[in-house]
Structures are given as C-alpha cells and as structure tokens.
Length: 406
Picture 1 (tube, rainbow, N blue to C red):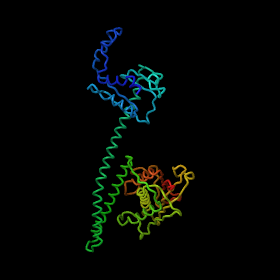
Picture 2 (cartoon, one colour):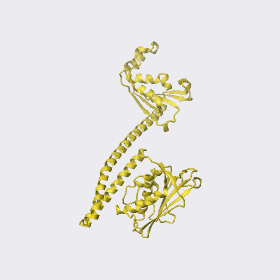
Picture 3 (cartoon, rainbow, N blue to C red):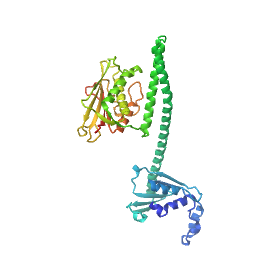
Picture 4 (cartoon, helix red, strand yellow):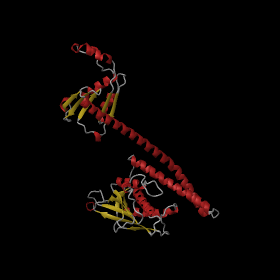
C-alpha cells in the first residue's frame, strides 16, 4: 500500500504495457548519444513483471487495479500470493533482468509513509548476490505454482468422488429394497428352493457391502473437504453403546460372511460392563454409534478363527482431565470408552499407520473405518488410540470424549 501511494505500482502497470518505456528524447544531454543508442530500440517495449506478495482485502483491491488495464493495452504482470505461514520476510526485494537487485528493509510497519517505514536499503550489481535473491524468489514462485496445481487437483478429485458416491447411493438403495422383497417372498414361499434363496441372500449381502462402501467414500470426501457436519445433542452414551451392540448382533441376518454373533451364537461373546452412573455427552449420536460399530466390527474380525472362545468387552471410565494422560481435553472431565478383544492383536507393521487410510490386515474391507472413526472423534474434541493387551492376547481400542456438564 505504501508502494502504491508513492506511485511504484502504477509505474509497474505502465511499463508492463509499454506505455511507461523511456524514450531516447527523454534522455538529458549530459548522458550522451551512446545512451540514446543503447535505449533507442526500447520504444514501446513491454516489460514482463512477476510479483510475489502476501495480501489482504485492502491490498487485493490495489492488486486488482494494478492488473486491470485502463488504456486498452494488455498487462504483462503475473502475481502469486504467499500463504500466511510463509510470510516471514521483513523486506521488499526487487530484481531487474537478473542483473540488479534492490532490497529495502521494513523497520516500522506502523508508518504509513514509505520513507518512514523503510530502513537500510541495498542496491547491488554483484552477480552472486543477485543470483541468491533470484534463487529465493524462483523457489517460492515454483512452490506456490505446485501448491495451487495440487490444490486444484485435490478439489477435482473430491468433486468426482462425491459425484460418483452420490450417483451410486440411489441405485444401491433400490437394489437393497428389491432384494429385501425377494428375501421376504423366499421365506414365505415353500416352492422356492434353497439354492435360489442362497443366490438372493448373496446378492443382498453384496448390495449391503456396496452401500457401506458408498457411505465410507462420501464420509472420506466430507472429511478431506472439511465439510463433515455434526448434529450435536445431549445424549446417553450407555444407550448408544447398547444400540451399537444390538445392531451388530442382528447384522448376521443380512451378512453371514462375518462372525458377528446373534443371541443364539455363543462362539463370540460381547460383554458390556455398564457404569454405575448415567453418562451424558454432547455429541452427534449417529456418528458416535458409527465409531462404536466400526470398533466392534474390527474386534469381531480380529477374533475370527480364534481357537478359544472369542471375547469382546466394552467398558466406560470417567476420568478427570488432570488425572489422565490418555486425553487431550485439558483439565475438563472426560469419558473413555474401551473395546477390548482376545484376538490376534495389532500387527506391529501397521501400528504407526493404524488410523490412516487404506491400512488393514483383514481380508475384506478397504481400511477406512479407523480413519473415519478418528476424524469423527477429533471433530468432537476427543482422542482415539489403540494398543495391544499387556497379556499378549488381543488388543484394546479406546476413545475419549468430553463429558457433558449439564
């Protein structure tokens, strides 16, 4: 803005269109004929200008004016913006033709006048000095270009994934509806043979898998575009855990490819150790239930083919923030939910990448559940972690959430 007030930016605009080029007749007599000849071919020459700068709302208006031509000529000005995290410079650097540099230190940013704000200024024609400044600016210029290209590519990818997931959701829901009707007819019609019923059940299971995958893809797109929305209400955490366990137990009816237990299946035991007090949290009930379901499903998969009786234990602990190292909720009271199994434990190979995308040791699934669960818990102001049990049997996954004070 100070450079604008002294006319420097206006001069940039003029010389970028050729309107501000110095002509031979403008040269004083004492500079001689050789000087006139030197610049004689520069009449109407367009000067290419690159500007690398941080910006704000006020500066943006000045820049818009700078790159907008009022005389019909096209500017040859390129501008790229330094992100705030890179804005550490306290100097203005100008380089001309890679031969001359002018560096002006800014000593008092509170001053409005240019000559009061700047301090020591260095003019140099030293090749090593100028080359150093050229290298700095070009590196920043290229980094910003790559960053903008990467950001645009990510945006297009998210939009594409979001579109595909939305388009898949509608026909998948229709297929599930028809499969449910077919299953009902098969169960009520004695003339349908068991083989045909098996085909229908298999189609239904795979449609369910497609529905879950579509939902996970949509969640990933929302998480990475920072559009994951939470509808927080005051809710009973114990009730949500009960709902998740109940859904898991009934899931075997639709998906027999897992070892999810029903009331008649004693191979896997899910025990919920309920607290002796009411536990209320401010949270999105559907999202918290999704996290619990993901962790329970992982525990079930981990105990599959277990030689001994598979066992999963869910427990809740209320912890004062100042007494716990397992939470990032400061001194506020939090609740920790633990889901412990006696399966094969967490593979040391994937432990450092446990909550990243596409990390799994299970034969089925894409490894998105833990990544989505972590994003949900973090969005609630909590923390999630996993660890192998000290006795060497199985693993325990934990997540903490702030306890409701009301």
